[in-house]
Image (tube, rainbow, N blue to C red; front, side, top):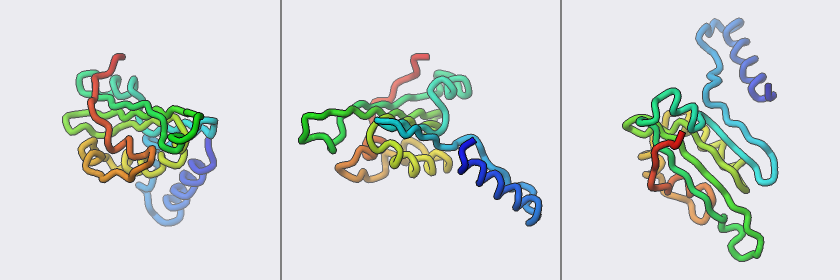
Length: 149
């Protein structure tokens, strides 16, 4: 168990035992995870397969993008970035965000908050993108498809 999860769980246990907060429990459902590799990989929420199992394939929409970040635009070195949003239901609640590429480790933290708060694809779409960044891809994705699982 990563240290941050253990600390959060311990704090909540302490609040239950000593502060009378009997309902103060850690939600393990949307804990962001990052692999600090080269390139980094980050994920929060459900995978495509998990979303299909939970909601049914007809209620899941996938948005994905593969691109070369602007960071490498003027160099010969090209390091692709891949991003995926997993959305569920008629309101397209964002139930999963998956990133592979430079900056994924930093980008994921804010989007993990959005997933935990139940943000929808429409709310992502209504966010003004910060340009030029890789993170803007998550709020400008179009052309969702049904899962192929």
